[in-house]
Image (cartoon, rainbow, N blue to C red):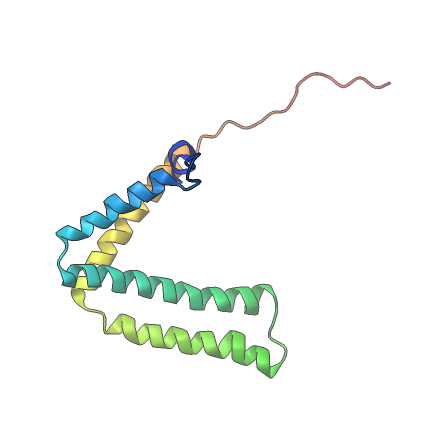
Length: 138
């Protein structure tokens, strides 16, 4: 998603992703412009999105893809527990403040717009047609 030339750079002396550290520092400094309510709203939305997808992923991976739905133990671990987790997160979604939901949806929309831009940008990838020299039978 990000240019490897910049974000794949590792400092030769310190062996750290120096440009990434600087970028994270700049993004973190943007928190100076948020009040506590706004920062908490963004964190709450992001955490709930992450927990929702964790529960859905556990169900999808183990129940549907791996077919782990044979014993009562597998039913408990890979069906019941993710369902309980999803219901708990659902209650948290319902009780989420309007500020959190609004800011989170704006944040997600910006990310979606960026993803759309990347998809449109890289959609026209030239296809490799291989070597067109004829192969002679010997």
